[in-house]
Image (cartoon, rainbow, N blue to C red; front, side, top):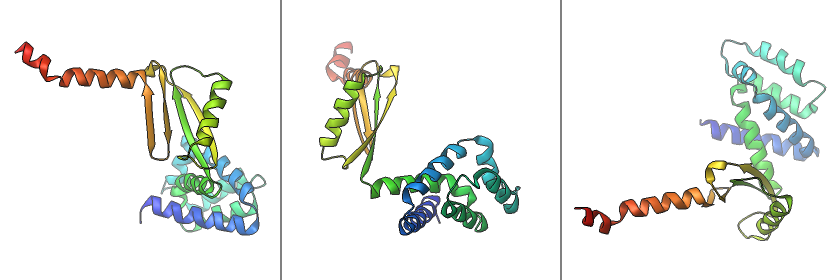
Length: 188
């Protein structure tokens, strides 16, 4: 079974359980916290290591998360450890957040610009995205600066990409000049 399918099924199970218990927001906080912990390379290697035994991993989990995470989240982590699915925990956490956003009708939009935008401009773009029929009811806007764009912007969400950057336009222009048959015939 693929990692994506496994992650999707376990994430769905956790979401259903959290909704049933009325703890969806609390479990979301725990999962987001776990995502941050999983960014630690040593922790991730320990999770994926077949050499480190499950009981050792469980001791590490108890030390790190007991008292900080909800009982539902701790029980879920315990089940995953018992079933030997700890190597997929990072993917399960990502899938949980994706499914949560789908339930709450949240679109995550990434806006990349060549230079930092003012708060007013970001607010205007956010309002335009909310009014758009392409996004969900709620929009989570992530901004990033990439000087290589030279100017303009790139918007990414779901499986869509709108590239209005100067670098992209220059690349298109260069391709058009390269493919221009009239110039190559003059040179011949």
